[in-house]
Length: 284
Image (cartoon, rainbow, N blue to C red; front, side, top):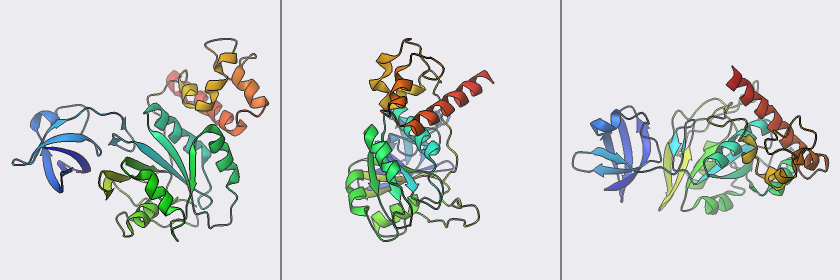
């Protein structure tokens, strides 16, 4: 039968197939494959022997966190505590765009005294969907629940922003362990230790992913980075050179758009920083 991997443990895989969860081992040949079985994989299972016989083709996969076949990436940032990390946010958007996953920005903890209007304005102007929530008292949870229905949705973001709290609020029970935010370090203590899919409704899954305070772009060259800053697309045709890096060139459509405030300068500055970082890593 066909099923979806909802949890991976050492040499054991929990597979939701039809109306039951089957704990399986991997068929011998699958263990020899370079690509491991991931949470989110669609697989063929032999119920009698409780073995995964085959991994079906993936539409996408992430290395960190290790998950496959994601439809949406809900990128959670807190309005404050911890302070929004827009570089981390943009890195995650880049990886979502590269993998053909729709990024949705969720600003959590809006009950706290913080101004997050510029974040909403910046990313809505690009065309991204931005929602606001407070997991503590349920603000915005109904809208979030509608957005994630009938899809595999991964929650991402640095520690302490409230990913697990949002998951628990949607289910109205503790399915994901919540962590406290360190007052001293202003970041969350790592609580989620593995990726796991929770079934929210029929054919609707939420991935609770390990909290992390860093997120590195993988498998992207500096030359293709601009493709994943989607607001650049309108102005690339105005560049003098087809190979324009949008950094040092004088007659650059992207730089002109920034100077005219058609592209957010903060986003552009983060693009430059990411470009130089990727270029430096390649040289090294």
